[in-house]
Amino acid sequence: MASETPIDQAKDLQQMLVTYAKQETVEPLKTLGRYLQFGVPGAICIFLSAMFLAIGVLRFFQGVERFSGGSFGSLAPYGFSVVALLVLMGIVGYLMSRAGKRVKS
Image 1 (cartoon, helix red, strand yellow):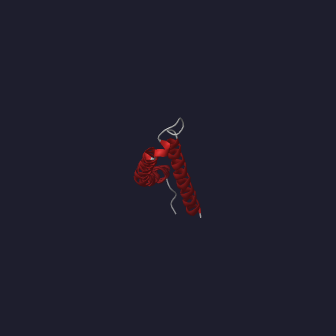
Image 2 (tube, rainbow, N blue to C red; image 1 turned 90 degrees about the vertical axis):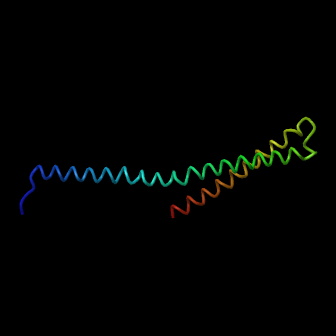
Image 3 (cartoon, helix red, strand yellow; image 1 turned 90 degrees about the horizontal axis):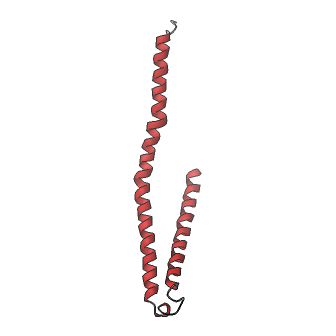
C-alpha cells in the first residue's frame, strides 16, 4: 500500500472541510427557509384574525345600549375586547404547547 503524500492529505482535508461546511450551513438554511415559508404567512393570518376578532367584539358591544352611557359603561366594550384577545392567546398557546409535545415524542 502506498502512503499518501502531504498534498493528497491536504486535498482530502480540503474536501472534508467543504463537505462539512455545506452540511452545517447550506442544509440548515434550506430548513430555515421552509420554516419561514410557512411561519411568516401563518403569523400574519393569526395577527389579522386577532385584530378582526378584537374589532368585531368591540363594535358588537359598542352597539349594545347597556354599554353606551355612563361613566364606565363606555369602557366595558374595550374590556370585553381585551378578554377576547386573552382567550385567543390562551387557545393559541395551548395548541402550540400540544404541538411542541407531539414533535418531541
